[in-house]
Image 1 (cartoon, rainbow, N blue to C red):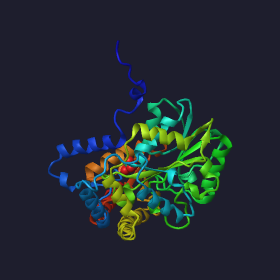
Image 2: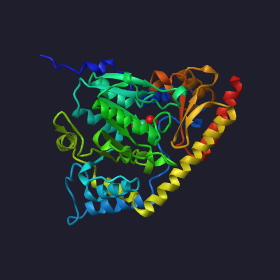
Image 3: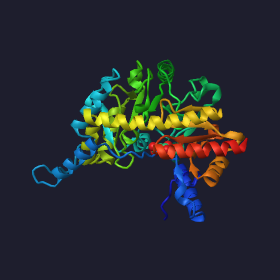
Image 4: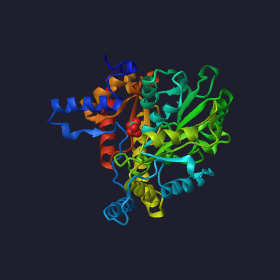
Length: 399
Ligand code: MLT
């Protein structure tokens, strides 16, 4: 007898994209200790601004409650406390979206639920992803051996692929504003995707983790589009919005109108969560509730403005150097074409070794990312300015 393993894991790249980048940085640092402290990280989208004061105070006070017999809490509701669900529900009304409380599921972030949701779907389903793509969508489906179809994004469609007959699929992943390209779908485009899903009976898994960076009249939520309640599940996170990358909290919306093959997906997700998840900690949910308070929102707006200013420093540099890019305006990501026709891992290695700046090679996000590179606006002002000065020197040398 021997336990049989999931052979699909053997088909995955040996390590997850950001683990591979971290490994290359460690190797470089150990070989170059004299300049290791000059490194500027603009690779993984990890925030640098601390948690807002209001959020910290709420968590400290919640921790105190946990230390007193009268206010101590044990297991909470798996789908989240009402106080946080109410705050999320109210937030959505700003976009004209009415949600029922039991359509909101508090999570420990978008990444986990984007993977976990696949428990609801048959392994025979075909999956559509846009390419370049956040690797989690691909890797989690490869683990289940689902067939994946790629909708190619490039300069010709401004990195915003649209529905086409060859993209027919049971499950469709959309991320807007997009990771990694920063491109954002407008209402007309999202309406086409919703109609496409409706015609095919597909389910859209909509990742709105970067919605707080949207400016102007772009949708923050897929439910702003008529008919989306019948075709879409939405995943959002407080990681980028409120600095929760280490604290971990997000929410998943599963409309109770979402039915397929005799199953109600909202009920199925509740069943899955009550079985496999014990909920996010009370302390974290109290911090998350404060994110939506007036003081919390003001502090968060200041942080988002800070990152937007960084994005402007980066896009100004790209404009000056006449480099093609997307993103940066409604997104913390700037997706640029590697200068000198360089391949993206080569660009990564040279930028690291020659000017000590880390970004993310486009190839790590799929075939269509091959000659592109992603920079994040999540660093400090000082480091962003310094990195762009070095970037400019590096690119000028190539010309
Ligand atoms: C990224 O850099 O793409 C993100 O930080 C990844 C994530 O949110 O999991």
